[in-house]
Image 1 (cartoon, rainbow, N blue to C red):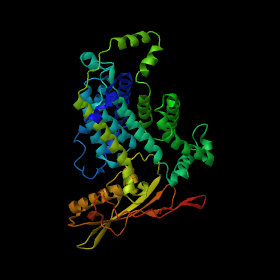
Image 2 (tube, rainbow, N blue to C red):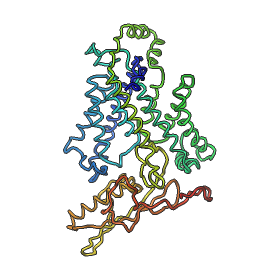
Image 3 (tube, rainbow, N blue to C red):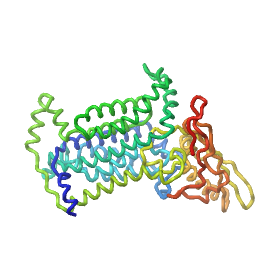
Image 4 (spheres, helix red, strand yellow):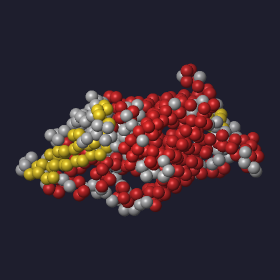
Length: 465
């Protein structure tokens, strides 16, 4: 414990303005996202219209609320997000938001997005951060809570989480396909009609600049955010990168949420520095700091718990993206270790599946029409994802037992996929009865290795070993 107590600087008071701005931005961005679910009717389209949802193995009990329940659920999420933004009932709001969003996240694998995972991580951390001491309704209603300073470890936590995400977002692109400009070359060619610069997207040198810049902006830019002299330049590079991504790709709130979180790297009082440059507001901002409450001392036990908790959290965040090395093959193909690893924008995967259900007692066989059970989006997502293929096979097993009275159905699939422009290759062992398999942490030997090499301009570029 003596070693932990040396982290005294972690609990030194720093201005809480930056954390307050992040709280406001996070809450407002999430409130807008919830509004988009209502406005575009995604609640019905993604969660209520499908007859079957690809719940995660072990979480099959997570099902949509009956009746109008899911609409009320999202409404509560929106209220919680606004409460976070305004710092009202903050502790309750953060807990409600995190568990409410986790429920939505677990409803359907077909809706997995890295930015939803990012929201979950930030939402969890917000529960423990004292982000309601500055510029918050809670602090106004409870003067004893009000403080214009927060422990430095609160800022450290967000910075550490951001560094992990940004660095891994660069590391995962050091793979043979990306270094050979795939799948970015395919995506940019599809956007040749983009205003003003779209005609350049078919030029190899332009694609190369974009691909290698994406690596540099993360692997070089992330460390530069920690150095005051280079921070503004790294931040500008990230802003340009994310704004361009927003207009070129469909990635939702991720660019704006990431930009808001990246502001955490600036001096903790940067919002006051900006406000002091605005007439009339400047004096009020300075007066607020002078009249600020003092940061209450933190006891040794709580300090130790906070340091250990942060260390464990970051260790887990580093271990999760590395777990794919425990599996043979590429995570973009097998999907083993692909999620929760910041494997962003690395694959263009198009698959096809034909499922067969057999009654071993009578040898009767059915060819499944996936459209009878899944939406077009679900079919598209499932066809290249072995875990979802397996989850669907178990669903077909249940359906054939219930609808056709088959005691022990056998489910096999002919599945193939094209990865990053390769020719179609078999994805699943067509001889395996998938009802006998379960998704575990062990290597899934029913997933076939990637057999098709990558060709560029008719020449062999790289072959998966």
